[in-house]
Amino acid sequence: MEAKVAKLENAVEHMQRDISEIKMDIREIQKDFRTDFRLLFGAIIAVALGLTGLIAKGFHWV
Image (cartoon, rainbow, N blue to C red; front, side, top):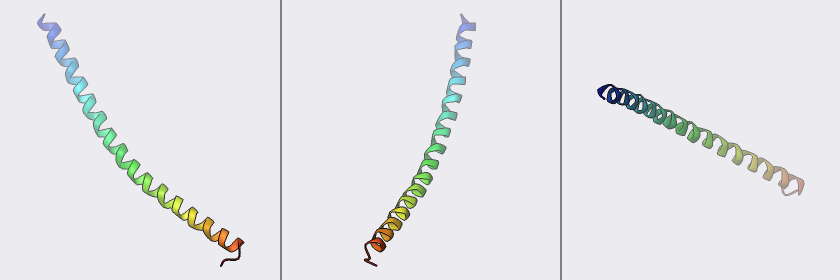
């Protein structure tokens, strides 16, 4: 009986370690998403301004 309990305790320790590693990985991914979002948002704004300029020039507004 004690061997089974020791085996279960060992398995739980491994699970806790794996879960903590997964949590750290998720935090790193979230940081990357923030950076990627800012970059993508800046690119979208630049494209929108560029298209606005082309439309204005096409209609001879500028």
